[in-house]
Image (cartoon, rainbow, N blue to C red; front, top):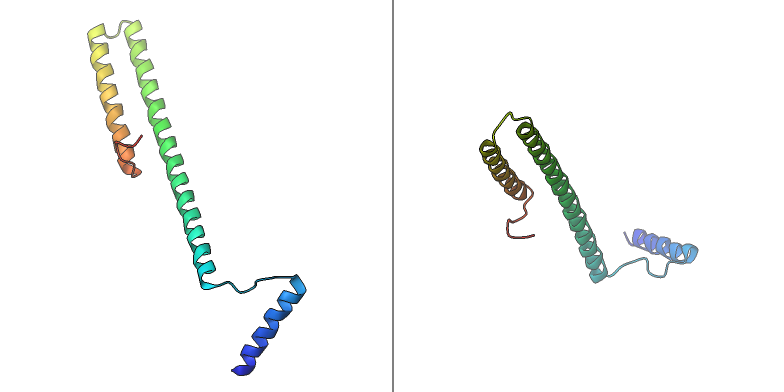
Length: 115
């Protein structure tokens, strides 16, 4: 056992000599700091991915709303619906869009009050 420890020490000494590594062994506090930094980096990456997915979902919802509104406007211009019906359908679409927006915020864990 003592020989293995001694061989390990010689190996580390060789690494220091060959590669010019000034500090091969890290202290406990340095290891904790590196772990904390790694955890923070991973949390940042996860939050960034979550924000990107949320943004993509909102973009799809907005494109869908724009498409529906343009179809509704086209129906009004072609006299397929009257102006009162157009207004009601627009309100329905806007309410539906707002509901989907809130559901998406909940789905991705963002509170409704945070903007």
